[in-house]
Figure 1: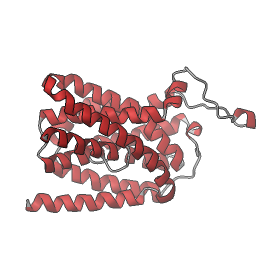
Figure 2: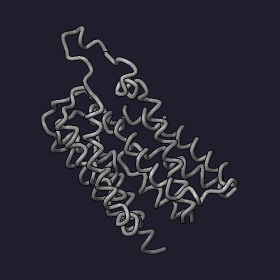
Figure 3: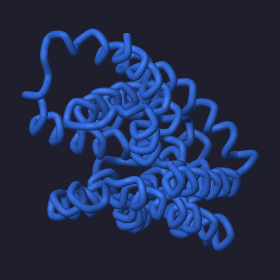
Length: 273
């Protein structure tokens, strides 16, 4: 029952935070610390529930994904109205994903050995929050209101900003959305692109980690791992849809302030536990 309870709690944490600009990795490390749920088994479990969150985004963006693969023609009617038809393609995703994938592969051992601790996560939470405020307050002139208006240059710029999220706690979505704003993307374009590039990024990262740690699994783990996967999927599905609506109204600032408050609370906890 203890493992099932941990699976449900961590699944909820993952689903709520994976695509919000608050850092799911940071939250899982901190909540795992509170639950006493740490070690190799916990690390493998986190990979599994991340895959559940990825599936939620894949479900939401399934038409867009199929269009990128050339399976369907995703034309919202823009061409008929004298506007250019859908033009986002795989090269945009490659440009956005390659920098962080390459740098993450090079620095993988360093990141795992030195940056996955509660204190480094707190640094990432604060630094990421500051960067989000900078992105909101110094947003460049909007050149791309919709995701299909993003240029290759903007995709690459967002990909370079995504490298900041290699520091646990910084937040991949926070880095890419704020980076998108600094690159001339509107909130909707930056957010949709952030969610879309999360799929190859997380599949690559989770797949790599799973290959390295699958031998820690036993048949007795399957039930509570499955529970965590399903919980993360359902909660992420709700969270992404809700966040898209909230972002249009509240922007990034409230999420940044939440990060500062969370960092302060956990710093006090770590100092006096």
